[in-house]
Length: 282
Ligand code: PAF
Image (cartoon, rainbow, N blue to C red; front, side, top):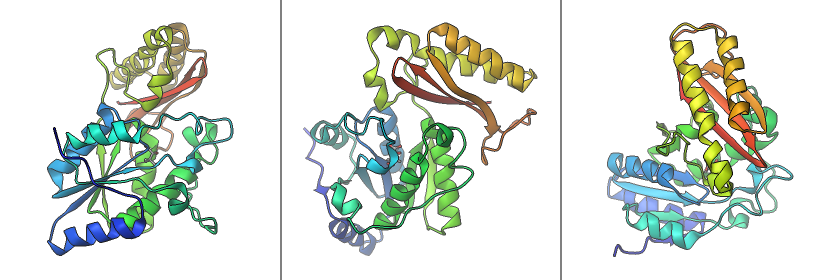
């Protein structure tokens, strides 16, 4: 059995541990998570332990990135199971702050990224990216790692984090890691746990529709036509509603109307009351 993973819950304790690592000249990787860990998170932890002398995983279910009526109250929380799974992978520290450590009552500051934070997910989840940008900025400033790891599954989040660290001169390298998928194509997500068996059988339809559209666009098909076809395919697969299917520049996320080789197709769709997102490189 692996040794239990040391846990700290206070910024001061996190900084003391990291200061000790720095004194020894060690590099530090940070893997921010909200727990409910799966192979997607584990791939981030592996990338960090390979590329850094020390790795700190953070676990904080961030209330500021959940809108009214969203699943903050029911979001899966099981720190013990997450910590046990992490121990086997060899990170060095778990930082799991309480809500009032991250957000003292008097906190008045927030970080928002207009434009990038308002499109796509931002349009359907108002306030979501301000919540993400605020907590990620805080985590990066609390830990000051050399590198921080984010999955391409939340592709817009990754672009936004790159933008804000550049804009605010936060001295960290942001590393994006590929989406981990089930054999069916379904992108791993903590929210997949909400799917019934019947919904689980339909869910891969989202990724398959995006794969097909990406291949068509790469092969020269009209982007608008490919988006329309993908939307139809997702609905035919059994999804109740499609929030968006969009083709965007892979770095800026600006809308793309002509294929130029550096683009991403992104989508969000509803299966019952479960909202799934996915994206593919074109
Ligand atoms: O991707 C997530 O799990 C969260 O958005 C993050 C980056 C940990 C911020 O709460």
